[in-house]
Length: 150
Image 1 (spheres, one colour):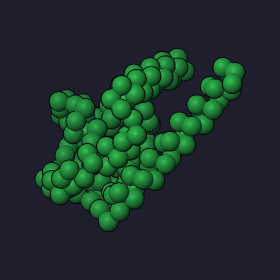
Image 2 (tube, helix red, strand yellow; image 1 turned 135 degrees about the vertical axis):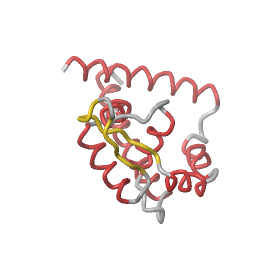
Image 3 (cartoon, rainbow, N blue to C red; image 1 turned 90 degrees about the horizontal axis):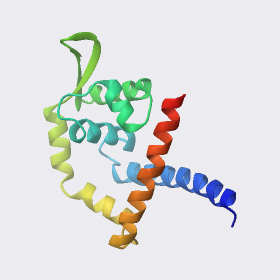
């Protein structure tokens, strides 16, 4: 296969992988009232920051738009899993705060999420997993650079 064919194939495979993982995640979360995208916003809010992040910070971390995170956050606020509060230093900024209901949601999940993620990668040995992680991180970083360039 030529380099161009490989790149085009990879582009399609990554989109297909994202769609399938989202569908599998939604199936795994069935009955919780939370979607995979909502799960990702909750996980990012709780693990990627040492402070209540702004909508913009979460959007940047997840590679999506402020409007998308706002729509997802609004649904999570309605479910009581998040609260949105204005930043006391800048009233234009809204920060995501995890709630007690959020803690109970994760507690109820127990090891299920770790087991789900492990099943997604069970066909990879440790070396393959490390190499895939390295390569995907490299491609993700390149995409971030291209987005910043406009």
